[in-house]
Image (cartoon, rainbow, N blue to C red; front, top):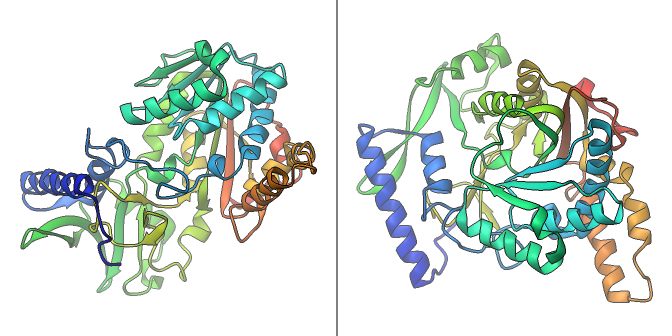
Length: 389
């Protein structure tokens, strides 16, 4: 992909980000671990992709999330949240990384209709720019419920009771990248050559990668030359932190990803890492740092195992399509007025985007974990795939 036409502001941001990354590489003796590079490119204050105030979501951004595709997503999810809150006696919802704020606004509106409003709706959001966007969305959609919403910079203290929700969050967590070369494993770092960002492949350095690879491939001789993929080493500490926060309730994670067997399938030999800019997908992590999104699919097996190790129990694993259908998608779609042809058509098309296998329906998964509450949930009634994890 060639560099697209950029505005003066985008060019200036790209230059600043390149300078920041160059300094970080030099400070690490010319070789910066890829996960740290990805972290800076996405989250560096004022410059990182999620911290610089550029439009990210929707048609005018770089990609479309499920809440942007249709309000039906958030309304169905609200039905699951209402059930969870009732089962655990929780008084709060915590959304980690609320994006544009559209999901929070739509869920609060639906929870109000269900007479299931939480006393508090907490949003953990580190980006000041996204906080402003979320506040505007909530003020526009549910201004009378704004008093229930509180923004946090860190997880609540121990003793939280309720539901924690993370939608399309984990795919943006920094990952380590590795490959098989000349009969050995190598780890990717980022270097500089003629002031350009370049790959630096070398021996494994980061603790935890070798153990992970040994667990996935006990006999690594079966791995093809050049096989490349990634690992998210932050899942375990993330789950431990949530376990320390959540005394009683549920964690619901929705994202695109695979079970570990599918993730590291021999035919997926280039891994899942991908970048997005203006609705175009490409693989070069060095093209537009600070302007481009960078993601990797979620290893749901690793996520579930991390949760079990942290003291959670598994409450369900399914595709997004089955989860939404079990939570009333058909009924909610039926509430759309067919006489309003344009609106009804939008709702039908949105439902297709959320559920068709060729769209989000199969590629996106839902994992629920529970602590101190009943484990049976409506969203996994018709198809629970936990045996595949």
